[in-house]
Length: 119
Image 1 (cartoon, rainbow, N blue to C red):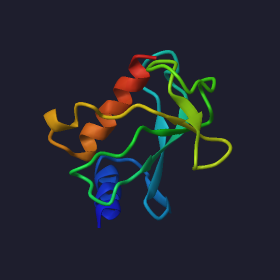
Image 2 (tube, rainbow, N blue to C red):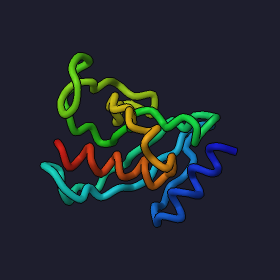
Image 3 (cartoon, helix red, strand yellow):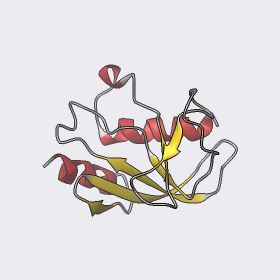
Image 4 (cartoon, rainbow, N blue to C red):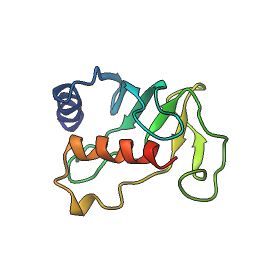
């Protein structure tokens, strides 16, 4: 149910999101700001079974935009290979402020916009 709710929330916001595997959702995304502004990419999420109590982990991004760097923090660190496939990378960017949000899909996407804005 959590994945269906997450997917429905993305679609309600106008994103053409689809289920790519059990517990995984991806969507086309145009980066609005930051150094990658205007690029059209794919953003993927591992949706936890207890969403919205727990947010999705940091995003999966395709194509790869940043060099692999397992150590460090945003904006350059915490970039790993992704379970979504070889054209994807995982950005370890947890929603550490989840408890201060309304815990909605809209809050997840605001976090994504912030990540790209601060690149």
